[in-house]
Image (tube, rainbow, N blue to C red):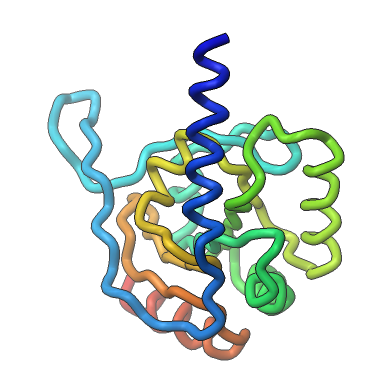
Length: 190
């Protein structure tokens, strides 16, 4: 029982931190440094390690990054109008690239794993209404500590290579053409 209260307290603190800001204008930040993780051989390597679940309850881990040369991770919240406004363009971009080259993953920062069915259904309705038909993760302790500890506003978007290294971070919303320009530039560098 004590462990349940501890997890609920953690999730409430994480949500409160993310509720502190909803960024309207984008500003490019320096690339975040990936967490150092220890491999099975005992040596440290750059990368992100997490386990979580998507809005349909499917398990997702850091191995998702190896599925594409470049992954755009868009951290959003259900209350954030700039987040919701950019999602139709993101949905179009998700379908415009070959999956082996580029993919988008959303993280719903204000809805934790284990949220009630009604809450998750509301998230699914927002995803459908915005045409953001790509994987969306719910907030978990693992996802928070691996990916969101430096996120102070939504939307925040960062780009991860196939090895789990964070390449670039953008705070705030951008339109489809600006995202497309950034994606193409990052793909050319890969």
